[in-house]
Length: 283
Image 1 (cartoon, rainbow, N blue to C red):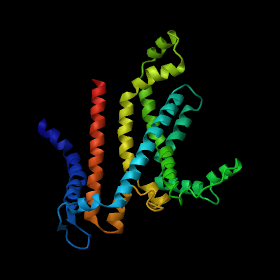
Image 2: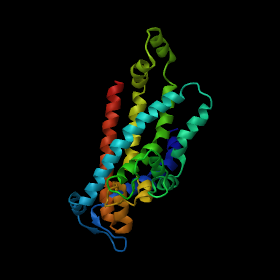
Image 3: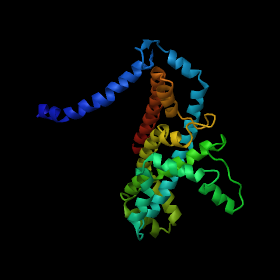
Image 4: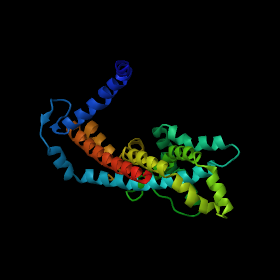
């Protein structure tokens, strides 16, 4: 029986080893080399990491990623909770509303970014046209270093609501209705029910959404590439975009690997801390 079990999981283990384990090990190894694709890797030890430590562009990219994550994750989670609670009620066309909010999640990010490029267009964009109606002057949203990152953040918030909403709806359907009935008998208002019953019961789902949202935010790339190409003046450069630029524009694969290792380390720490918090809360 044990041999049969190993035979059944062998294809999955081989897949993980070939496409996950080996690339991860190779990334760690290449991060300690000077490798430009055209010549064999040359061992340089920790020089890539020392260079990253003094690189103002990577520090800027790290800061931009932290700011992007700080705003997109909690804002999209808060909006998703409210929408999930609303769509968990008995509404007409309930499934259509859910599908509409979830649609951006399954739409190609490049296509979404192209739509937002039109929205942000300083001459013919929808956003400036709407502001002109109320007498507010428009902006060159993606060309201004003071506004470009906020434009990318808005897109990230909007696109990330769908999957979070879906997870919250699934969690809401597992809450015992008798809790709300007992609260109604005690005279609790809808707001009191939300803060005293709904939010506490959603804690496991919230921690899960938080972890996947953090990981997703630190991996943002497509929309930055299409919307701003990391500009202007590196105001929207993210860690993943800097990895791409090091690898495929400057052909510094060793440097890109070192940057990837740092990104992996940060995400690992965040995941372990979140998991520990979830376990402590469950206990």
